[in-house]
Length: 76
Image (cartoon, rainbow, N blue to C red; front, side, top):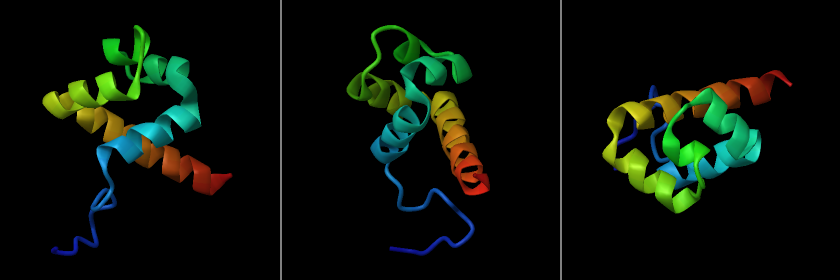
């Protein structure tokens, strides 16, 4: 596997990212930060993963929020 030192998401699976965000923010705040139906109406990891794998713009927003949450955690 090729290393990508400038890519902070390299090697991190989408399910890990989503689980981290749910633990960090909770479903309610996650749905407020990224307004997509899979976060606001009967949310679950599996339904969200299915949607995010099929929707590139939503996945980009989730990955961006994940990186922001890591930066915020380092500040504390």
